[in-house]
Length: 254
Image 1 (cartoon, helix red, strand yellow):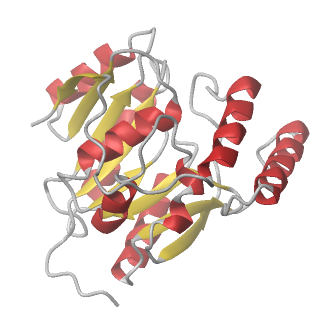
Image 2: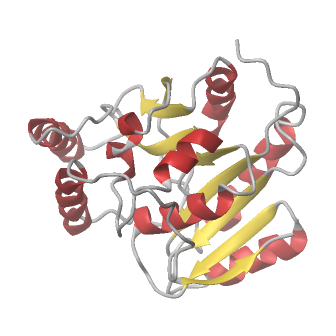
């Protein structure tokens, strides 16, 4: 068991793209979770919502949440850059302000209560804890079939992926520092998990139905992600950490 003198500062990093329907439903759940974790995490813990150039009222909703509760921070990108870029921008900004991050999508299909088990793994010495789906029972037959094919193809091309893990994960300061030395756009984050030199743990959970809105991962985006995954294997870390994303247009923080 890793001995921690004081509770860690935790930041939820939440990429958001056209989430005006979901955020009013899921934002209270995020805030309730911060409250429920009191004692296990520091009072300075926050929810960082990253608006990836949304075309709807997502940013206005984030600003309203921030004005109502200082535990909500916001980051707005100047244009839509894609899920992985938005998530990376949020992680890189948060890494200088917290001890651990938990990346999770705004729709909360990933069970936020699995964070408790992630913190247990972190306390045991895991620098990265990956949320892994217990089953794909909520998926359509087509989705399940394409997912299996996707992982098989990625492993064929040498990508060291954790099966049924997407981007729901805890990362500590050392993992975030290691990640910062990988440069370039559209980093395939789940393909880097096992290359950052950290002890990796796994927590399983049941994936829920989406609260509102539609999935942003179209077939075209999934194909693009697969291509980036194949390219990821050739990436080498740089001596210098990456700077803040130049497409960050505005940040709300207390």
